[in-house]
Each structure stands twice: as C-alpha cells, then as structure tokens.
Image (cartoon, rainbow, N blue to C red):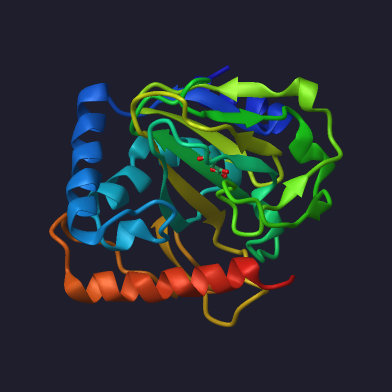
Length: 266
Ligand SMILES: O=C(O)CCC(=O)C(=O)O
C-alpha cells in the first residue's frame, strides 16, 4: 500500500494524522521570521483569519504540494482553501482550547473538510500541543456547552463534555511537521508552559461542492482541481510578504465576516 493510501486509512479510522513532515526546520524558521516581522508592523496576529491573503509565506504553506497531495486523498481532487490562521500561545501563558469539534460553527453544508496544523515552533506536552480523541469523528456532531472562560481561545468557550477523555492522544509536532484533522474530531489544547512561543499555522480546506449555510457571500480560493460550483466568492492570494495596504484592509473585513459567521446560530 502506498504511504498516501495508508494516511487515508488511518485518517478514516482515527479522524486525524500526526506527525507528518512537510518542510525542513530551516525553511520553517524563515516562515516564522516572516510572521514575526509582520507582527512588528501589524501587532499580534493570533487567531486572525485569511492570513494567506496578506502574506505570501502563508499562501505558499497553504499550497504546499505535500499538504495538498494528502488533502486531495482525503477530500477529493477539487479543493478550496477556506482559511489560514496563526494560532499563537505566548511563553508561560494560561490560554487553552477546550474540547470541541470545528464543524459545529462553520456553517458548511457537508463535512468534506480537513484542517491542517503546521508547527512553526515546537509543539509538545509542555508548550500546549493539541490532543485528539481517536475515532470521535465517526460519531458526528456532539452537543457543545457555551460559556465565558477567561483563558479559553474559543470565542464562546464552547466545549463537548460527553466523551471518553481517557482516550486522548497528544499530537506533538516538531517545527515543520503537521497534523491533519477532520472537522468532527474532538480536540483541545492546554496552556504553553515552555519558554518559547507555540506557533501553528492552522489551514482549512473544503471540497468545492460545499455551501456556506450561514451567509450569502462567503469566500475561498480554489487551490487544486477545478471549482465547477462557484459557491464561494474568490479570495485573492497574497503576491508578496511586503504588506499591501488594500489587502490588509480587505483581510480585516474578511476577519469580521468570519467572526460573524462562526458566532451566528446554525
Ligand atoms: O492551536 C490550538 O491549540 C488549537 C487549534 C484547533 O483547535 C484547531 O486547529 O482546530
């Protein structure tokens, strides 16, 4: 069996793949540097949407051939890049992510979706790498309780409570490695107790036939195959790592739109 087929088998069974080497640690350093140089201009970029529309670095990572080959094998040959977000936990900070399923708040009509989390620094037990519950994607949508927890990264502190936490698997990643997870896979992450920042580029892909059910005009970019559905308006990919003021302003608006979608009811 080819490696890529093994990945599909493992993903179908467990709802995630980890760790998979995507780029070298030297290349990872360059991408981290670009992010950190950009933060000096724009301020903190934690959890900001559609970063591939202002940074070529993020677009290049989101269209990395090894990533897209795996994504294609998981959700089919016609692929839209929906979002890319740096998820950053500063050194020795208490922020965490409660147990949740991504697809509960995105408003997509179907579940042919995969999230990639590419490590730009070391992600392990100490720095707050993600935990996954194997096989949880097979049970579909679970009830989430919402609330307000000060250090919870998720906007509504949403959490699944009815599942077997003892099954959790830590997805430790070295810089340049990635995990892939299904939108129904229950996952979480703990605080960063290390002395380095924990930085991941989180990238979401969907199959072209998906529709956005919560908004009339959501957007994405076709990054492989063809989009014969045109259910999404076209995002413009960044051409450079030099910031373009128009693209920066456009991204801010897209971020607001994304926040409105995820916080609105299904
Ligand atoms: O970065 C984290 O700690 C959590 C990320 C997450 O929930 C996701 O990638 O879906």
